[in-house]
Length: 383
Image (cartoon, rainbow, N blue to C red; front, side):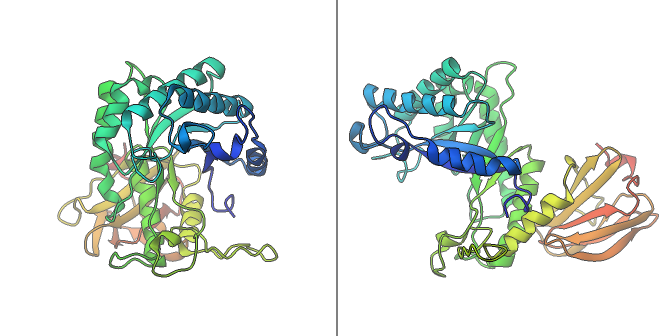
């Protein structure tokens, strides 16, 4: 089901306590099985070095030299074990949140540990990719402390978790700020992108309008705006619901329900969010984001999103608005365009006239493609 949805990456805890039960002895067999299961589908893994181990530092996040060295030895052994398998190695999960860095977040202890792991990876497997810090929400002070301490010398990407009870489009300013911090502290000539390493919306929440359909709509917009903001990889939280309690929103972030039944096909019940990600990846397969179009006034405005994707001489569009529903005029050559909903349903085709392509925008993204693949938007709209 993951492969059929178009997913190319999964993110998974590499749990210290489960893989080092005896000091200095490592058992990665569960992860061998995971990697073997992913390989036929060409799905790659982001594995997270976390959390604590009762064998060291009183089961607290590493804070002594001995505890740090034990963590580093374990992390280096994991990297060597899976070297050359295309893994993204992520340094811890949300170390700026009390639930994960015990007994409470300590940026200095995190930095010492992350630097030591980076040095070990460079020594033992320099071709592997190391990223971090998987910060909960956007936490500029925590990020800047990490960057200032030199972690960008080791990290190939900066990972953040931009959860919010707001529209996904509001991340643009946050990403711009983080990008500014990266440029301030990154080694000269090193390009370090931002990765949205964990982020999603539930289908049940105390936010007006949230339901399974709205979750699917927000998923499509989240992936699209991340691409528009130069974020090359987005990990949706999470694959399947954790439960069925309608009052517990934490149980409802999944793309599928929690009802695994191995005797049926599919083994999980897809939610609209699953249908939405499959429609998105299918429609834009092989296309790359080119630009966000500037729409002619008075019909268009800053709340309107029309994103252009290109592949050779072909193009695709994604269009929606964060404002009230209305029509906009897109500069386009004469011709028909197929229109598809964010759930993959075919809509009535639209035709561009001499003034351009007129379409109705709502909060639900729609996707467009010219009936003739070589049809182009007017030169003014091209990148």
